[in-house]
Image (tube, rainbow, N blue to C red; front, side):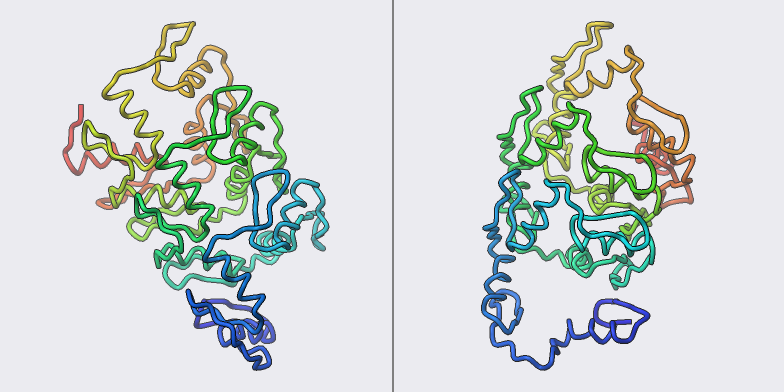
Length: 372
């Protein structure tokens, strides 16, 4: 196993090849071009020129069909295959095919070999790709090239920082849906939203008949097959399939929230949650009313959910039995009966639960707090 990054392989030639990544030994080629930002060295000036885009955030290659842009022309070429539907890379062990070779490699490792050679020395996270490990390591180092000047957020890519500022601070959402009052900060988010109107679900699971309108939902679903939860909380042992879920969970321990209520000491990680808090706790403004029973709410999305109690619609379906429900969190709670997963653990005793709200209630038995 590599003592630098945790990479491991059964083949000695592969290991020797890997070690050259760290030693820079590629037939002792001289590398006179060095990056002044991070120390990266290369034998060719053109490689250094491309590398510098990771620091400047420059992405000169634009997709003509969406707002995707790339630092390298080859990456744009790979991206365009997502629009044409072409999938030239075929798996030799099943009928899976992919638009990019990198995606095929991930599939092969995840579904056939099970190999995850790159391991984090801090928390044991394992992955199929070195780039994924590098991204993960930034959680521990806190390293990001682009810093937000309004909070402590940092990003590796300028595009991510721009999106963060629009979504969290300025509230700018220039892309509007022409079928409802939805607005988005990114064109790609509007595209994903439009699928909720058309009903199109282009992302298919290769192990069952599940399909999703958004890729992130498919990725989340696939963890029900693999059971993979690589992100672990060092405070309480909570594990998550996605880094964003772990980040949300960590706020329970840190008490950290970006958006503060100016009328009380409430903090929220997202502006929408703060807006909801102000409307429900302070202003009492509830402009959305049900025509069937007079129910009122501060948010249109809540009214849409409420209407299901009248229509009987149950859009959230279990993929392991015939259970369906009106509420997403109810489905999560139900699925725990199949998986036995109880990610929220009490630090005082052995109590574990499926939902964070249950843990909050349980903690009152230790603190003696009586909020009502």
